[in-house]
Length: 499
Image 1 (cartoon, helix red, strand yellow):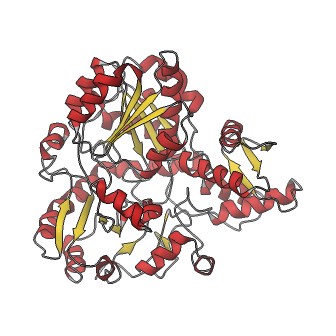
Image 2: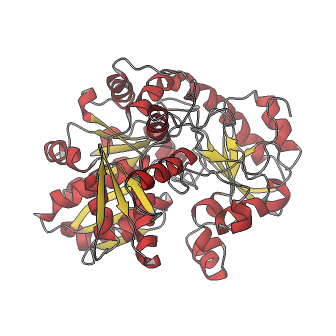
Image 3: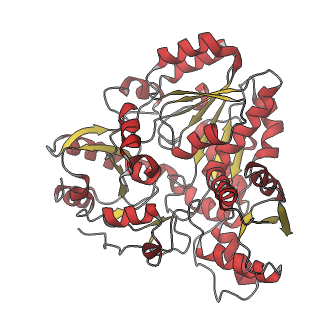
């Protein structure tokens, strides 16, 4: 296929950047080795999605600080602030927490207890409280440990305002000051969860609703990071609005917030946001909408949400070489003033180098999505025509097309995600397909993978877990396609060879 050179296992994606957020896993056996963290496999694959795998620059920074602080090889975690470090130690239930400050950062010295350390690492993973590879790069370069830094396009001047204004314009926010940047997409979600939890505590509202099968770490934040007395209600499909209405009739005065996605990952189902908004207003409940997959250039979600969340790692950046998130507040929300006070206390701000990189990339966001939309509009019917595919899930699927069209900004604007339910063995497609294969989505290049293996390997790797997925309407073998901006004929040629 023209335009794509197959990448060996363990090579970074994109191959030209040290800050790449994905890694090449060209076969199913490679992917399973990656997920199992097989020691022999890890000798080959030293990279991964940054919240799950320590970046080489961050690891080098850890080693330097270990020597500088005389830690004698003790395992450590570098967090973005003392507040993050303290919250991590509380969550991991460390008996004698040891936190060392280094500038604006805080280093947590782990204890000699595997279960405690496992919880500490999970907290950092789920909440996005770690540090950026660009921060580590600058740290190492300033100390003479790197000969040179990445040569990349950036806009340093007024970078944060450029990014916030671009997002405010795209979402229809009242002002750029209503946009809050976060160090990771999950940091934006965690900050929102913590802020609203504190706001709602005074009203004795301590129950949360997960409306739809949400992104893995959003589920973990609602489930694992809640206090023991906090309840979680799960409605597995965002199309079950009557089930939500019944729940609110019973528990509406205790619900602290409703999390949903528009559309959802990986089934691309869109809730009826207008009806959801009306239900939430009846019980004075804030609605949080993750618009990462729809993007603000395709869907208009803010009128129905108290706040929107976006992972800027994805389409807003498009180059798969930074981690960042955003919270966009609706100034008409009854929670607006309280959130303006609380969010600055709970959000982890991104590193200036990442903001400068995004300030350059975000200027191309509208055109990027136009080209992605064009390819998706052609690929979806192509997939529907193939006998090797049982079902095609995308924004305009029949089950929720009407809901999506209520919020889309114009016809033919589906976004870039398509999920395939195959009639043939997953391995026969995945191993032979000549496209980039690895975790993440939303890049300018097409990136594919079996989403549930990446996000829920703990479930797909055993029959009980697979049964749980099926009970929630998810085939464990779903194949997700993140559509890029390449020449359409090249993409169709590549897929035709394996489907």
